[in-house]
Length: 406
Ligand code: ZN
Ligand code: ZN
Image (cartoon, rainbow, N blue to C red; front, side):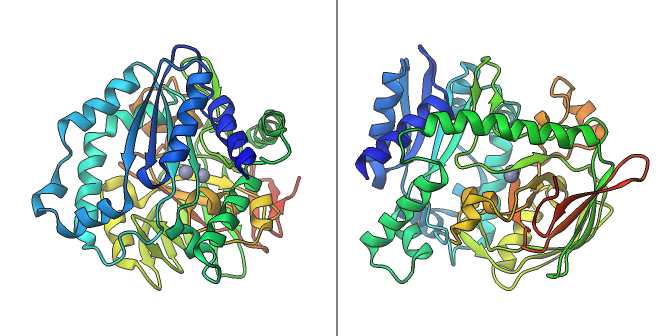
């Protein structure tokens, strides 16, 4: 196991963030998994990093803060934090985010506190997030197990066994184990780029989603949209992989052009709470009704965050036969569940889906949605059909029975 974890750390640094000589790397990781953060830092220095800066997280302290800190704490973000992120973004430091959060960390916390802090940090870090979504620097989000998360995924196993099983699943999902992960990823980047190119050439006007869960949704796509897959180029000129694992090919929907009903197919871990059985109704692109069997208050608060939160910002295609879905594990972690299922996001659209040299206003005019948030949620099922409608009205099957038709 130790060798495989080392191979994983090396993959994150060499292919994920693709750390270059002389570059600063900002790593966010949790204190409980400090040993992995140190291993990653060592790999960064081996790759020639100038400095590795760590921003520590701690689940217990985060929960304690939401329960016990003063009311005023949730309405602002300290200035130094904004400066920290903007400063490193300006010097094009690479960012590696290690996610190992308990999916239900903030269960029972006042939803108003979560919403207010979400709005405050959204406002304070807007420029930084914008730069990240424009790929002005390389960034890579990955996951490692924590006991709380592993126990949620494997409730029947003892803690140690659950953590081992989750490590196993994570490493499998990122193709680590045979010592050839770097080569596998280089090939994967090319194969997925070809599929994205095929979709871009169709230049669809809209997509129609249908399945037996009850989904019946038409989503418009904007003029000049591009389908993209992993392997973005940062402004530094180097390619990086934003998410590991990744199986998605994605683009942006046209704001204002979604109508119908959309059923989520997996629970969503949002702000430390699980939202189950989401059903959205769309009218003129806007979510006009949201239902959920649990966590509805958290979901509603998120949709109220700003004007753009109720509009879609991403359309992503993932075959039902994706290797992650075939593991048949519900991860309760969007990084994994979104790569096991077709999904959408509500909130901000990635500028890279259109010509990213367009100004923010020009992007908006074409139909790119803007918001503080970007939340992926899963909708793929075994029987999902997606039909593409071209500009001259031709109907092309894109997904048949949950998988790519071509
Ligand atoms: Zn996605
Ligand atoms: Zn997304």
